[in-house]
Length: 517
Ligand SMILES: *[C@@H]1O[C@H](CO)[C@@H](O)[C@H](O)[C@H]1NC(C)=O
Ligand SMILES: *[C@@H]1O[C@H](CO)[C@@H](O)[C@H](O)[C@H]1NC(C)=O
Ligand SMILES: *[C@@H]1O[C@H](CO)[C@@H](O)[C@H](O)[C@H]1NC(C)=O
Ligand SMILES: [Zn+2]
Image 1 (cartoon, rainbow, N blue to C red):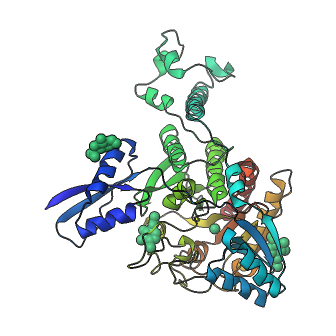
Image 2 (cartoon, rainbow, N blue to C red):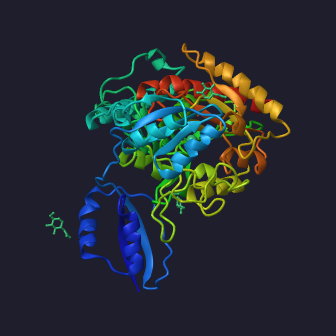
Image 3 (cartoon, helix red, strand yellow):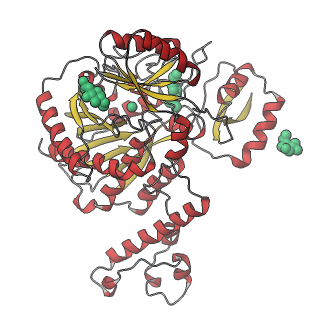
């Protein structure tokens, strides 16, 4: 018996695991691995079962190494005007691999057309007199412009600034009635030097251990899309800085070994409803995760008025989310390894929940975007959510899952064009929410309210159906954020704040409804 420490790299993870199974650790691989350790970013360790008894346990660590990026040069987004049989032509093109679907409803389908397929698809649709518009003429160009990057210096500056700001706010609150009530400006200098300066009026009031907290900031803001590290850093920061209202926990571990972090925001009051909010179940829907973090920020900043206990999971699919930054911007599924003998990676997590699993709008083929997995909750990310709900005693009244795009507030069912018995309540609250979302910014954004399967398309195994049917949570909604197709999934970062304000308006409206139950 011996123990192996395997450094799992982003690209060769499957290869590594296979190598372990084969009991041969290729010298070349060993070389690569030992040379990656410096850059290693460690996540939780997870034991991997192995058939071979020689291996006792394998510790997986996720390592970031440069990876070949998928490019979308020359790929286009088309809006195909399709109803009835015309949409079957689109299904056909999906099967041939010429296009992949982004979204669609009864009258239109948005598809990504690969560059090498453009002439073939053009001919195919023209012959059948199907009309279409080209919405994005070059997806790679759109991707390159979507997310302005920040330098490490800028991020560090941000991190320090947030720490100083939090420290200042806490001080101000603690000394409200004392001599410092006239503090109005945020100290611009480093807190640490101020602390050590000797003539600081607060000095003797800073408790032992507080220095660590006030030096640890976070990098979150809402002018760009952030990597997982920044988001998790933000969650940890909140839990550490505001322990009276924020607590975080890992409800599970992703396939590649990343924690799935949940933040609870609560004042610990009795008789308030619990509300679930998640984002990022589909990796490429960045605006969903960004909006959910914005909601977190609002709820914490306004915690005096907290009206519910919030359980918030901003990144349901951390592996997929990271992969959209590193490898393929348009990745949707999780990053599970292929079936035995297969080549395709990933499961559509929003087809993997255990109510009417495997029904309409899902696929048993691992290569499809809507592959439902090998069974209900076969994936660690969905199982983590299920386990959480089985263990919690919180009184959930609402379950909100944020997606993009299309601007819809959708209520069950998704598995078929049917509605639950109390759909009139769900519809009424959704309509109210649409009004609030429209008023949330000056842009009067319109959100369409409807039944999932009717307003969009039937899709079984979604989390909202499961929450409604199995958990019996009254207000279960899927909210598709901006836009209506101009940018699709590649929503430029400048839209984060207005979109997130709309998302927040829906949360506050639904919270009010939940309180009345
Ligand atoms: C790591 O890389 C360096 C140079 O690239 C090489 O000299 C060294 O032997 C490598 N380490 C291992 C353990 O292979
Ligand atoms: C993705 O799906 C596969 C199923 O094929 C699962 O085994 C794996 O754990 C999932 N990955 C993550 C990150 O959850
Ligand atoms: C389908 O979506 C398009 C684009 O968002 C919208 O203009 C159209 O009204 C929708 N059609 C139906 C039947 O909902
Ligand atoms: Zn989605």
